[in-house]
Length: 430
Image (cartoon, rainbow, N blue to C red; front, side, top):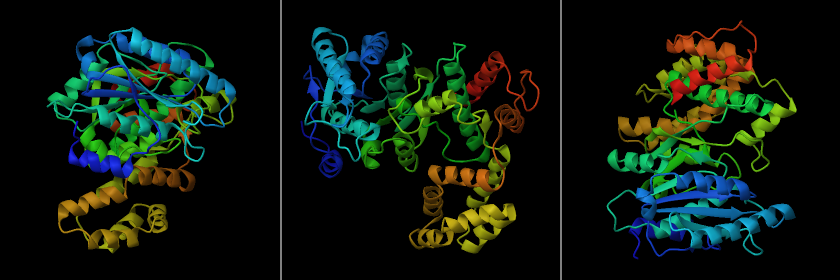
């Protein structure tokens, strides 16, 4: 099949040779789910069984690609589990007639990921780039790239809702609702509740502050069409936070929509697979290294909110922004100086021709990463973190949200009350 010209250019410039896609079908596809996996033999079985419970209407037009990966230096047990996984998937692909499976072997001798940048980002990229080569470009339907992880399960309407949302609403990019399992009472349950507080509190605080980067950044929930994927030059090769940076690239050119009518259920396990993120936060909680029941002080988001309002002005005077920043808080001014705002803004002015371009360029500069850097700078220099539940209560008040959750200020409530807090955050951020 002849590829669209833009895709052909992308593949020649950005795809990485060295890996092949094994397919048990000659079909071309409209929806492709890409799942990187390292030492996930049992979880893959669970994920597949969960996907199989979906309505089979879209199965003939859907491919599920597993990128089984490790480094040459990975432990022998990991290589062994990956070898067993490859055999299982090959058997599954040829012996069941519902889901169509694609396999990328980035695990066997000579096919391993490179030591310098091998990890989840590169694994996702290899899978997503090869997915581009088997889309049905003659179809008028959206060609959708769906990211998830091997330790996830899914609602039975998962595939239907993604396809319907993208096609009926003409979406370019989206994130899917997520929920960790909090049904337990053990320390791991407390750990994942604590981490989900952080994720949802930060999202709602950004929304309160008027940030344009209000979407959760969880790799197992990301979707985009092939047009937006190649427009932002594809997935990055980061060993961690690949989801954050990929979604940020998308957000600078497209709206990141929210698909709330279906849910992904990521694992809340501790993990060695990435240097930070869910698995490491769970590990840190369990190790008791630090007090995990702390969140960013809401006062720092007040500073962000005031700065966002200033940044939305159409002035071309650098002095206007810096003077206003200093009025908001001297440390905000200091942060902007450290970030070389004046030099960056001069470049922005020189390369923009109208108000719309100016606003876009300001958004590109003060992006999601720089927003997070500001919050960390304010945490370290202005308002330190405070008790998790005090922070959430203040946020609820700022958002005008009433609730009947009972606890004493400054305390860490019992687990049942912690779950009430999380359910309220989920309600507000779904």
